[in-house]
Amino acid sequence: MLDTKARRHLQPLFEQLAATLTKLGLGAIGATLVALGLGIAAALAVWGGFYLGGVALLWFSGLFDVLDGTIARLTKSSSAIGTVMDIVFDRLVEILVLLALTIAYPSLGVGTALVFASIILSMTVFLTVGAVAEKTGNKSFYYQPGLVERTEGFIMISLAVLLAEWRALVLVVFAALIFFTALQRFAEAVRLLRTKN
Image (cartoon, rainbow, N blue to C red):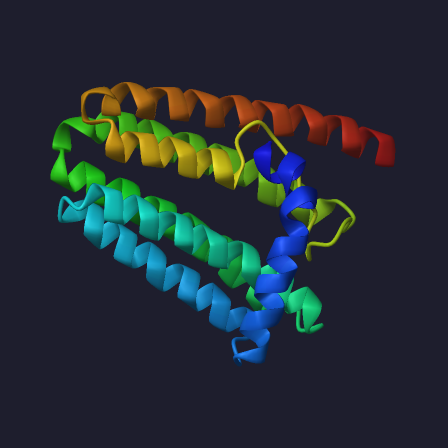
């Protein structure tokens, strides 16, 4: 939701950053790899108990994840492999940070399993609809907005990392929000695909 609502206000800043990085020689796939590297570093920091550092690295990873698409559009270098890497690496970063937290605190296993199950369901709907719907907008695949998008995911993961006494509850709430998003996207997909028949 925040990604969809706030993106148009922040896009000029992202375009300036992307232009600067492009001048420094960073391409779209390079930015995707930087995002992945920062995400891996975030997971290692969380696993090591450096929670504030881990959260900071996670958000820097998210910034480069935004910039890779902006760089691709700016340099007209969008590609199918870039789209695949972007989606896969996004989920990989989230999985690694949550796994790092759960390895450090095994009692969070049920909450983490619920989050992973809801992510699987939501991404199944998201990617299935993307495969059958016409491409729209600036992205190289059909983008279905929902209650929980990447920014909300980062907020919930950050809360799970930082709020030690509330971690289990945060994970359960996070799973419920993702599950609601999956239902929201499924209902929207049914409406969209019915109108196309």
